[in-house]
Image (tube, rainbow, N blue to C red):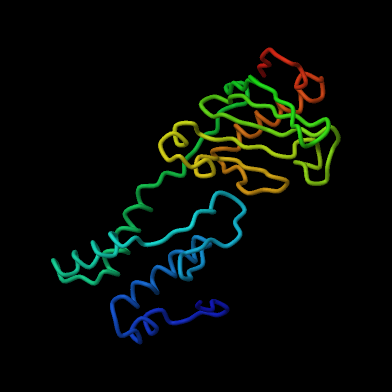
Length: 216
């Protein structure tokens, strides 16, 4: 892995590489380092605070396509890669107006006892187009959210889950006695709405009801 403790001459390093593959590998390192990723046998993520959690790897088909393009037009595969990255980044829109809390609808739909933890139970429901599930403990815990009773909380997109069959890949928030996926700026309003609903329900003993729905 390259060391980044002091500035280096990127052009000088690239010129020392003898093959296009080495150049491509190096520039991918630069891009992924900016995105807080490290590269090894696969491009494994460093421990992330938010959603940067998936492994990234250049597929065999992508690599083959890059070299086909290079053979077709004579450009270095690195050039094609950098153009693709620039095009993608240029299309991203970071302007975002979060919905107000009174514009978001959250509803508890189901509660289930947790047989392995005395007094604990699961609460699940919906928040707008997302679904959520939370493990509520009998007493506050150091490992709970804000050292409270919420030991686990997942908020996910059911459409993404259906399309990808990956639960963690569909999650916009995931807490399992510690943060796996912190809420992004887009997901934060929905997390806050669910958190408020859970706190309200637990505080008023509504979560332990055997049936019925609770909206907030």
